[in-house]
Length: 512
Image (cartoon, rainbow, N blue to C red; front, top):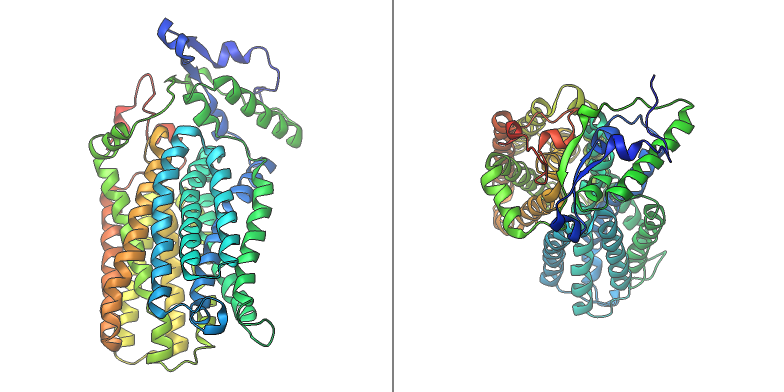
């Protein structure tokens, strides 16, 4: 095996980065460079560095699942006069909508800032915002305070999606990008299961007073977030972002240190990267909104349709079940209200196991086949569940079991939706693309969905089943869009899937 780059190798600057600068570029501190950094990152063997990325960045989804579950579980407690807030039922719904609005706003604002100022700055800022807002939520003594802090908690979590997904994809080798992305996004459901169990204990008034237990729930989320922040401080900036934005020397140093550490761990040199793996980049400081819109509308219109289809489909499917599952169990199947939340645990397990067990197939069999299978499969299974439920063939146990199977496939597809939009757009607009599609999907599921399904609930079982059919139909439609417009991104460099806008010789062949 030939030797790769090591820290302090004096030949790297000559062999790996050649500079062609105009006078105006030099004045601005920007250059046109040739670099093999993407190829060097993609050829790295799995190492402690990659585990650091997963632990420091990926575990935040557990926080998101914990947040959403806690609020859903404590909703009834917050309406009690002795809770310290005494919200009305409509105010609980308003708080949920405000959280969603914060998530959508945060994803768009921080998504743009992530592309402009870097991944690391923003994944520190967004987690810091979440920590501050969730702690203040625990100390809310009036409804307006609860609403305000829920908005900023949502903004922090929404911003995380853009900053984290873009950073992870740019640091994880291409051959493992699918399985890692799906497992990380699926970890949301670990937080959901943990939150469901946690709130059953914290809401027990025999253990904690009514105005204390729900506050502790938010405080524990902040403690977990603080631990993640301490680990995250050691995660580096994306070298891909750095060399495009004029920090090529820092990018070289960072990648060299990663390579050196891996060589020491494995006791042998890394394989050298050939010169023909280099790409030419015209460095830039930022990308304007006009260019961001142009990329989605004119450069990659089919990919934009694909992203919208995948996100809207999964948002409505999840909303169809999760907005109605408590009502279905308690009102229609007569499950005691203190028992119904436990149904969320097996459903969450199914949601986690789907992307965890199927994730590697997205790298081996391929994105197009597996996303199509996940979307259409979950849609068909939900249709079957709806038919059986409508005819009275399912009791609470078997209905929950059916939901668990449906979400085993749906969760893999939903996680792959995040993977898809983070892969198929250029480096300069990646975070903003994730933010946009996340905002659209979240708005559809968290704003439009509750209004629509809220009107269906009053109609009983048959009306609820119609909601299932709608969610299933949109998933099947998303699967068909993937079948015809999907991008075969497995085992390919991000720069090959979508050439950087700054590339000296853009790859026209990958544009759709």
